[in-house]
Length: 197
Image (tube, rainbow, N blue to C red):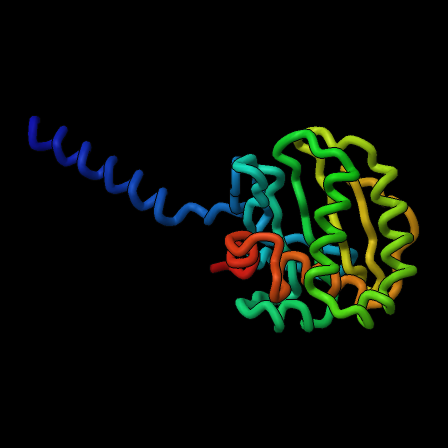
């Protein structure tokens, strides 16, 4: 009888182990407690999570970020040049003023572009900045997305609502990507995370 009970216990343990091994893999990654789906769609275009990271400033975690691409890439130049829709998903980890958020983005663009490149982006950057200022205070847990739409325009959204007009030109989105992936990134560890390293 004891042998039978032991055998049943062993089989039960084996069944649980097999069930755990055969269970579907998790469909989300997590960074700083924020989940990021491994796959998503932008319009009809399927995107995959390329990498995630956390932006910190003065020892404080400011936001978690996930980068979505048509296909994974571990090289920054390849990511920036990769054609097709893309998404940058940012989730604030503390209250962030729009002005502070904008200042970080503006400095990131300036540090990664020549004077001639900035001149070509000037009018569109001003339109983008005006829209971003309208956000006011971003409460902890706010979700900001920067989408490169299938037609090649950049759409800013906050908490699922599109803001302002889409900004034309794929070069504009590439400029945004360089904030985090350029030669002078906002944070080295964030760049590595976005590249899946």
